[in-house]
Image (tube, rainbow, N blue to C red; front, side, top):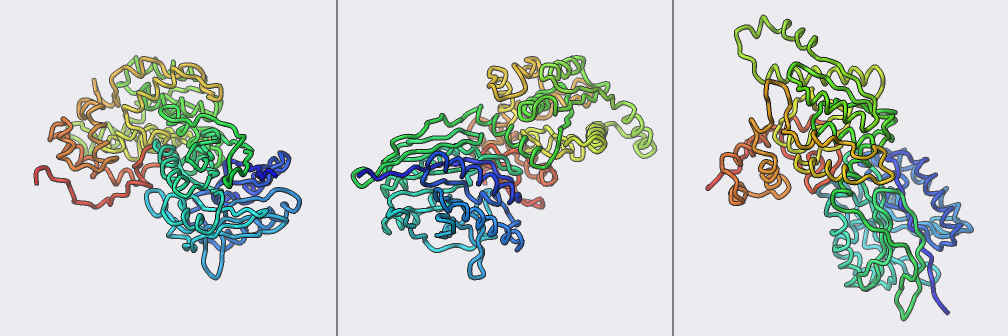
Length: 553
């Protein structure tokens, strides 16, 4: 007699706090699995509340509403497949992240998350209690392990399940995207699978949640570490895999295999998903941004058009006498190629008014960055006025290189609700623009070659004074970004960065700029996390901080 299991992986996009909406999504996925004859339907980590819920789980009414929703879902399993999801769960006065096994109309088993991540973007140890090592559950005579996300990244749980007789592991996950995510997951989790000989069904959520993006990319792995099932990246997806028990081991005999995205396409889609979900889940109908004719605003406009559709994107050019004719032409052409609304509002009247207002105090002083920053703040004020009057969310457009060294104006071009390129270095901005111009997938709504070539190739400039270029006060971006990668992503000592071929004075100056700009970054809007050390959730340096890495000491 063939022993078999049909396992449905339901890769869904929850909204944090929308318990009833998430419950409806689970119910819909469950009914689909039931119609497909599945034996088990698996949903992502904390799907009922959304992940990460942060301090929302400290509110007693939230925990009670989650429990009621889970009980309603369990009641629906009376004549269908088993349902596996996780939820905040109160037991004996403690709050846990718990895997709930629902079957025959009730919650039959509860398994508590053992390893609580407390590093990088994770703060679970702050709000949840640690559960004991989880024992397998029994289903139709089979022993199944239910490790929750981090339980498989750390030692202890997989081998405990194997010792207790588990035959297969089903794992709900809330694993956020970063460029190394897929390789890290398959390596870390694959080691547990291979060492214990336990096949794994890994179901991850997708969607944007503030600064985090979840890519889905769910998969299943055979006992020898071979990937036997893979779902799509950055979109909701679903698959039913057929497993058979052969010679004492579970083997996947039928499942779909999608290509998991990586490289520039994955970065682009992460930016689109992060911005799109932030706008949609927070109820905005439209976004507005300043389109300067430069590459940063152009890429943000293209991301917004791809994510939301051109009809929901409003671009505004705000020229001064320092704005070149090239920038005027390029901004207009970019807006036309994207098909977005485009308006021009000259800032000179406001700048002259500020000059007249401040003239008694500034009399006799040479113009400097003060006057430049006033222009930027006038633009920020103008865009916020449009946001207030008409309701679109203001998108800000500073790249990671600028945010790192403070080359952004607080209360000026840093004003806004969200920044899709906050974790993208300037050199990566150029690479992403070129990638998007060369590719036009059907589900990207911004059209073909949305970014005019001249915007990509011309020297970057803030155009806040005559003949200004970024290279006047910063190293060329390939040099700057390599120094910043060493300081931020790799946490290298300055000697090691100089040894890569950089001038000592450049490295020391960039380090100083990086540290003194911390106060600005604390007041910056959220943005999509792409790399390993984004500003905000990953890299949390103190504002008041006299430490500087010294050269040669």
